[in-house]
Structure formats: C-alpha cells, structure tokens
Image 1 (cartoon, rainbow, N blue to C red):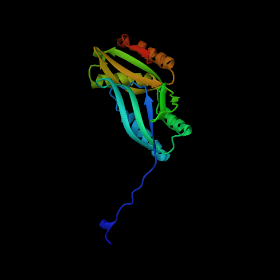
Image 2 (cartoon, helix red, strand yellow):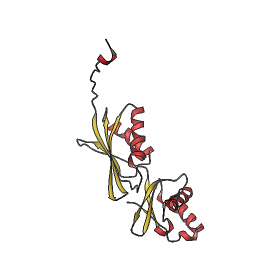
Image 3 (cartoon, rainbow, N blue to C red):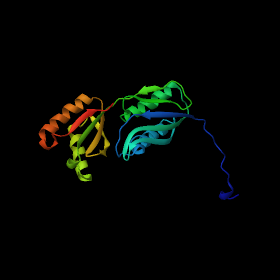
Image 4 (cartoon, rainbow, N blue to C red):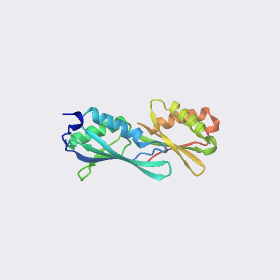
Length: 193
C-alpha cells in the first residue's frame, strides 16, 4: 500500500453558530486583525470552537461603525457565551456589545470600554505621517488608559477613535496634552454613544 492510496476518514464536529456584535468605531483598522485573529487564537487555545467570519459594518469608506463576529462553538451554553464575552472584554470590547446563538435566545451583554472620538482639522493631520504623529501624541497622553482604534476622514476633519475604561479620565489626560500644544486648540473630543 502506498501513501497516496490512504483515505482520510471524514470527521465532523458538532458546533452551534453564535454571533457577537460589537458597536465599535474603528476608522481604517482591520476588524479581523483587531478582534477576529486574537479571538480565534483564544478559542483554539481553549478548544471551544472557531471564528468563521468577521463582518465590518461601514458608515462610509474606511469608517467602520460596528463589527459582527460569527463563531462556531462546541458548547453554546450561557456559561460558554460568557467565557467568549470575557475573551472579547480582554480585547477592549465596547459597552453595549452582545453575544447570542445565531438561532436566537437571550443575549449576553458585555463590554468594558467607553469610546472617545477626537476630531481635528485635516490640516493638522494632512497625511500619513501627520496622522501617525497625532495618534501617537494622543496615545502617549492616554498611556495605560486607552487603545487606538484608528481614524477616518469626514469632510474637512480627521477623526480618531480611542477606547478605554473611562472617557472622563481620557479627556482629562488629553486636555493636559492639548493645553501643552496650542496648535491643537481646535481639537474636539466627545464620548461615542
């Protein structure tokens, strides 16, 4: 018998399809890289299931306003859904996120991060280097408080998205940074709904 003559035995794994919805603004960031890939690694490590699809909902070009993660779980009990929710919380899932079986059922609502939108005149961040510099300045000001979720352009503004545990703390740190840089006096920060 030759190796080429060997036949694989078909194997099936029973999974229940589950959807996790995250109301996250991400700008230009890749939802698969930010949420999908890390979650899939966590699911595989825990032998819970797999990610089957990542769907980003766009408000416009390069302006993600929500993400749906489609999963196949070996066990879709409430305890398992809560475990997946805690995995997503580790990835800074925003408040108002939910996970439920695709065929219905009561959702598990979760989330640990509040969103902050910072808008500046596009002249202050006219190109990639300017956007990187501004995002780094904001990230440095909010170090340990927030994660950067990307940027997008709207009319004559460039909008940056940050998520952290407290919008108030993020705004306080940013106001100190903005005060230290008078050119940023026109920057506006507001809580995301």
